[in-house]
Image (cartoon, rainbow, N blue to C red; front, side):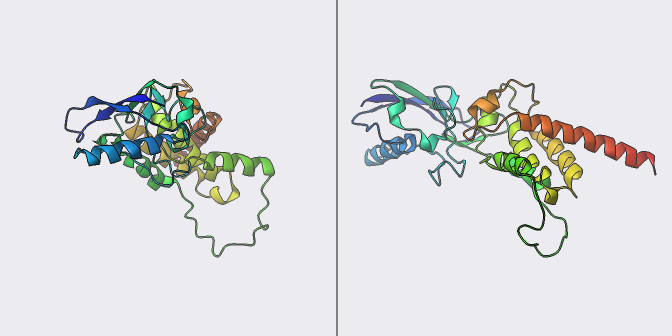
Length: 253
């Protein structure tokens, strides 16, 4: 098959970007979208040109590195799929495909299609862990957890931190990412000792980097792991409870 790629090129966050067009012939429909870029970069190198910078790692939909906006959609036209799992059979012969980096102020462009997502790291560093000194790990079945709770925690823990939710959100909000990283811990018994401190720290760190959530729901649609916006409601509940708890503690002093 033949496709035309319009790819965003930009040397750094300080430089002005532009679209560059590439005609790609003899493309297999079984090729993944990242393999298409591998072929393109090989051709550019043979021609003595600068290859296109893009993120990739596992290429199995696990690492969250493959951040590309494809024809205006985060990760492309197939729902519940990361860019590395998107195959060329989802496109038609002769298609013009526009590829851009994540468009979000909090994700500055490093080069071409590569962006700096370290703001996500700051959110996780602020509370996305369990740090209570509880001693050695107990037996696996010592702490009973209802199946519904365990299932919900695992659903949230599927988040791969790709940033599609931020790129798709009109406000550049990171509520779905933060809610997933927060609630997969807050739902479990092991996460209870730090539950409310975790909620305040992670939400307020998020607010310092990203826009506000106004429930557009685009984040849920763009998420390659199909994480529900219900977790945002749970996060907001815990944040409000944490504020009330802190006020009650302060009034007793």
